[in-house]
Image 1 (cartoon, rainbow, N blue to C red):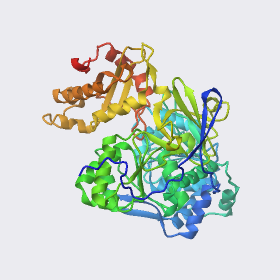
Image 2 (cartoon, rainbow, N blue to C red):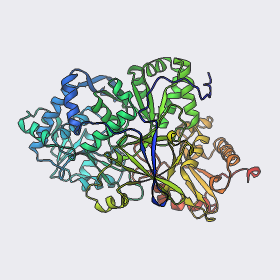
Image 3 (cartoon, helix red, strand yellow):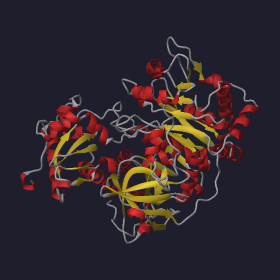
Image 4 (cartoon, one colour):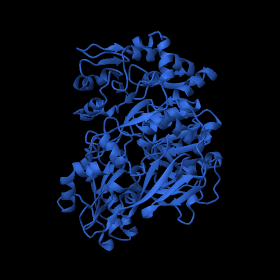
Length: 626
């Protein structure tokens, strides 16, 4: 059931809010781009939307999550309606006011996505107290807690929420004895904690509504930490004005959000802007429903995501490329999954690393076989500092790497930088800066007030700017070979991952000041299938060094060499990494995206050995391609 590759493919109807660009020329080769559409009037406090939906659709489900069983499995859905959410937020808001929290002493939330997390955040939001969802990995995966310690030192929280005893070690190591710790269940030995039930039982007073009415567009809603590359993460300031403007921008660029209350089945972490601002925000702004997915695009947890998608039919669906890859393969054999997931979904949308074209094709193949049409795969570009939505596609005929045109109300500045074109942002959705870090704030804005993203772009078709832009990698990742030739890392990394699919999670491109380009590959668990003769408990290093795996990747390297046009895009050496990227060292984000600069920094000795022919099991192209 191979999907036809046709420019006239049929798609499930989807309107696009921005289809034309307005350009103007600037000094020094800069070009300015905006949408041929103005930002429409919108709310200036996200809490106004919460009150609206609680009053107009009080019994609609706001959020749901499966109950946790004693054995760790999940049961039926526990739900919170819009009315219940507002009532509980007011109680929590009163409890936070009683404790004197404010921007200088905000609420820090250490837990994963949960109903308790959502209600705490909503309570803080309602009374104008900033909160910060801190990456759970900083507490549960990290061994040194340095990033958690840095986050709490930056925030100086007045209250810390930890869901349960799994966080005890992190709390004991980083949270001062004078800071109150609230827990959803259980406690921490040797430390006094407050049950979340106490906050929920607090009776709201008129002070709650007074605090809510005192908030305004410039009130800080939350702090979101960047992932950090070579430096420690920075706390991005998020305000009501930013969030509301961005949600209205999304609504105009993606009109599907306004056509019916959106229903999401979503795992993306709320400490990241995609999950916490983009997806939670569109539910708050448009009166939708979010089913918290405790699955993840990993072999151990993907079954939970598939279970949820067999039961709950989303109207729009968001994931990362590895998630869509797993779903595409699962749908081929799972009729219930195909039928439910495709029953009413209007758009798929991915973020992060590029989605390999073969996976894109497989999704379309399955969709056409099941429903006779394709689902548009939405793509775009944004970042924590832009709330995050900034750029979105203009039509359904999308290819990997396409990002489109700016959303209404934003202006892009395209600036020549080191042989590439950097994209810069200005608009009501752009952050005023980093919390307690004025130096970093100054460094990130240019002389015209545009935020310097470090992302590079190209026109899809220079003769037709209305088609928009495509992604061209991160400028900071690019480097020169010893010959002076620039290596464009983003496109090359995408080509390597596609060539190694489905066995490659990510790749790091090497070769700074060397004569040739190399690639360090981080494998996916599926790579063990290439060596079925080895027992399942065989260490990964032995699997990667087996003749079967080495032979397969020799073929991959040879195929890459055939398609190379010069030294800048010819992978001259390749090595499979058995040690996974470290979250403590910032080598990988919560979404699983690799941090090229951090890997090169922390594994410099290995990289040098790799290029000096001192690293065993380094592959090189066959002689016929040398």
